[in-house]
Length: 108
Length: 114
Image: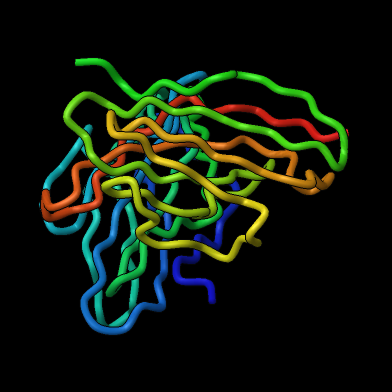
């Protein structure tokens, strides 16, 4: 069963515009949610995780249990934010499951 | 501190053959996870190894098997290759018991099955 859903395959914004990458999950209980990022010609790497409640490179993500969402947001997008973004989740004894990814393009 | 390394980087096989992919985990890590990433898709969990034993498996047939060695390096073996096995295979290491699943990924092995 699909645990993590990213509804947008592609997202394009202009530099300086706000950006929101959507992620919905279908875990019960208290899952752990993550955002991973893959910049061009680089390996997949952790961007942030909900338990840390941190802001990395200006990005934040809040776990909304009512809406079962974990959207990634940044108020002012930069060109270097262009990358593939993957939402991932882990619940119970299951291992980390990834969404299909959203390709973000930030235009100058 | 060395990162996760995978070999080979690219591989071409024909249908029915067998393949072995290798992964060296990041220094200090004791857990290795393998993922398959088809073109345009997110990584799909194959299995995880911890202390040389399988510690979780995704929805993959038994012809996908693995090993973890005492130095925590790992192999992914695929028997009777099928065309649909063509994908990027990612290895990720982590530290079990650290309280989270922060994975450190390798660059992957691109497998093409003809």
